[in-house]
Amino acid sequence: MECNSGSAAPRDEAERAAAFQRIARVVLVVALVLLGTWILRRFLPALAWAGVLAIALWPLNHRLGRAGSGQQNGVLAAFLLTVAIGLIFAAPFVYVLVEGAREIRVVIHFLGEAQRNGIAVPDRVQQLPLVGHTLAEWWRSNLSDPAAARELLGRVNTRSLAASAREYGPEITHRLILFGFTLLTLFFLFRDGTRFSRQLIRLSDRLLGPDGERIGRHMVQAVLATVTGLVLVGLGEGAVMGVAYIAAGLSHPVSVAALTGVLAVIPFGAPVAFGAAALYLAGTGSTVAGVAVFCFGLAVVFVADHVIRPLIIGGSARLPFLWVLLGILGGLESFGIIGLFLGPAVMAALISLWREWTDNPAPDDRRRGFSPSSEP
Image (cartoon, rainbow, N blue to C red; front, side, top):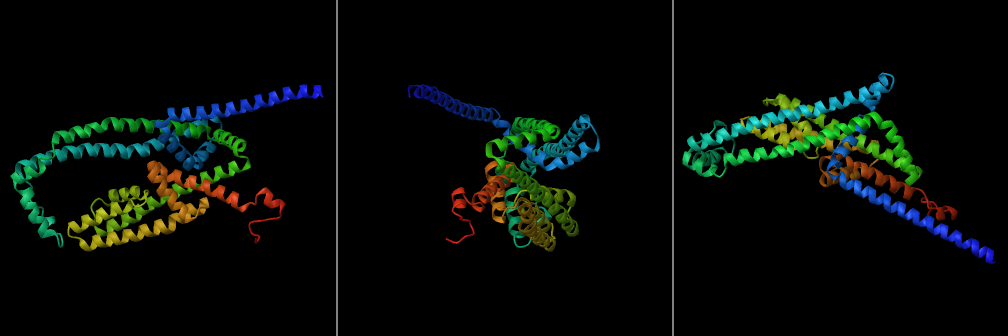
């Protein structure tokens, strides 16, 4: 008895030491993860964008890498694809930046001339239906007279306007740094994506068991489906509306169509573009064309948002339409633009867990012969 009690004491002490080590290891891991997240907190959006782009463009990167042979071709394919993505995103940004700086100078000059000489009533204002006469009278009283124009526009300080425009410089620089970090991360994801995915699968198997890989695949499918449903369908909306703009005689229809396609990626963003185009057409005297563009745009958005996108996103990610919509809108509100892609991915993981827990009976239920389809 004394021998058994003597051997049990060291065994209990060893078990307590092992339990303490496991707890210490978990605490250390959690602390390191939280500390690393806090250190990278300002770069998390860049990392998220790099992940979304890597998932969406991985098939293309895989084809480019497979076209050659050897590791150098894989690195070259990752580099070329990353550079192409950088140019695709940077070219419109530089164009908008240059045009915006030019327009600011035009606006400042226009305000100065308006305060000195007043602004004559444009003919288009008088031709507006219903409100044209009233708006023209207000214009003559407040803008055509130089004294009234100085009183009305004097509140706009051109120097403060230029200074506020210069204040955006640091913010633009910060965004460019994040964009460069996104491209750098994207290159490494393209280059080492296969090995990284295998590591993630091993980690999910260790933490969640066999269900971890399945949940991860559902999240990846949700991201792919969301990119297809939002980006490609949005660009399709812009192309269709471009035809309507050309038919209506809108000036610069290609640029407006491109803007419509970009805004169509965001839910309820396309009506802003074609609504402004419709108002412009009505203001220039083409009232019928403006109404036709607006009604046609509503029809296109209704079909895209309520038929095509739910079928693409919900069908590929196996998500009900309600959860697709809630994931997109909730992600947009919580995380900004990147939430458009993160929201459906999180919803896909939650729905996958829900189906796993509700479709499969618990161990006690299986022992009693109970199944979800059996009646109580």
